[in-house]
Image (tube, rainbow, N blue to C red; front, side, top):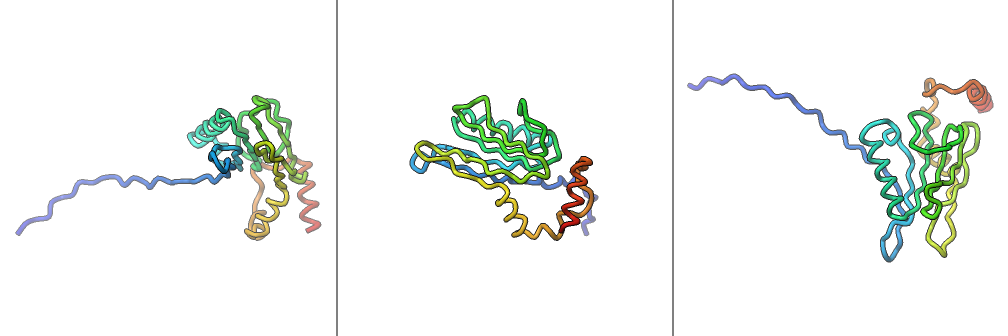
Length: 174
């Protein structure tokens, strides 16, 4: 009768966590050439590390392709992406057009302000589309049922004193 041999041991490698970051591209119908890329920044786009580097590379690829970039940062936390002369704000929307490079149009947004309507550049002769950020966020908020859990706990990063007063008044009215 054979005896059971003592096993060797190996360490289990944790599974790779694959995170897909959705985005929207507008392409020319005939040539399939990129016209405009729309990016809603995620925490992984902003945190230092490989995901941020990958996004910054993608941002450069859009510029080098001669396409437009619409970048929306609705995250108060995390370091900002490289933008010179960005006014003080909690959030921003940026529209970068190849003909304006290296400048880009910026919509700085403070917490109590409604989100703006921004242009989404298309190719001439088509006029810019309009993106109503407030309506989009409100619809996502309502559809996903965020009112049931989004306001639990203390905001991170903490609110400034004026924003705390604004939020307290808003909560009192609700």
